[in-house]
Image (tube, rainbow, N blue to C red; front, side):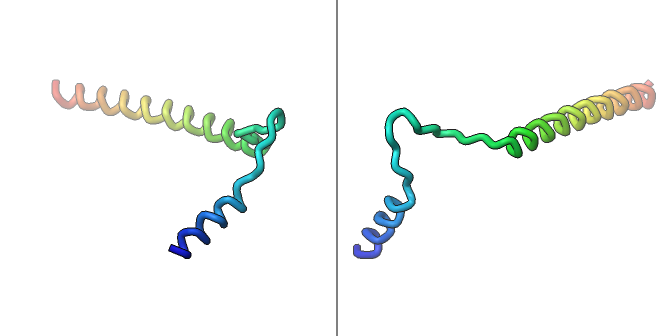
Length: 66
């Protein structure tokens, strides 16, 4: 029981104080933005490559069938 109270008090100590007017639930830094843009571009490139490979495989399957 005492251990649970200690755990709760440490969580309360780590929780930042919130005052009206200056609280932002999301903090975005420039490095985060650049990383997200990079990962988005990489995902689009990989998606295009995957779709082209699927298309090529379908054409090869059609040639083998008939």
